[in-house]
Amino acid sequence: MAGTIAELIQEGKDITIHLTDTEKDRLKACEQVIEKGFDTFLEVGRALAEIRDNRLYRATHKAFERYCREVWDLGKSKAYYQIAGSETICFLKSKTSTIVDTFAADPEQAINQNEIILPTNEAQTRPLTKLKPDDQVKAWGLVLEQLNDGKKLTSAVVKKAVKVVRGGAIKRNIDTTKQALDSTDLVSKNFLKQYNVLLEIISEEHRTDWKTTSRKEAVKYLKLMVKAVEDDN
Image (cartoon, rainbow, N blue to C red; front, top):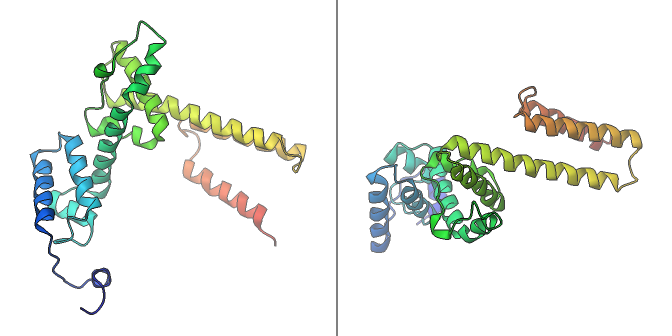
């Protein structure tokens, strides 16, 4: 065969790829899970991940995204949210002992590992996927506190917890940046003062979900500032 399979696919040529019997069995099993319905999103996410990671789609499609769209009418973002959501649940499940420990300090809210509630649909996991793993655990701990107080598990409750955790992470990053700048004598006091003002503005915009400033425009002008500093001309 002239050229590798990857080269032929890149050129858009039609080729026949045969799966092994084991791969065919796994593809069939995964597709049966998906076909049952997207309400079982944990199993669906795992099935999609297996098809993607082992390239079980390659006998009929060149790309995983195209396979999802043409076989399941599933857009790229939705497919990856399904996968990320199932991964998040598996991660939280592996950290149940850590979550239990956070409640141990408060006897009134103490729970055991078997009582931990996990997300029940993809919408509830989506906000969590934007956090680092350790922050996901913190956010879910806040969600469980709300559930102990009588709240129902909804995506809105999860979003609120994620917002609190993200706010704390942003504040830590800004404080670290300030400390680094305070420890240097390579910038003037005027530069230090103005830089700290800018950090405070950024912190406030984060706190208010960028209601008064476009995040995209802010990044644009910050990049222009960096370019102005780096420009030797």
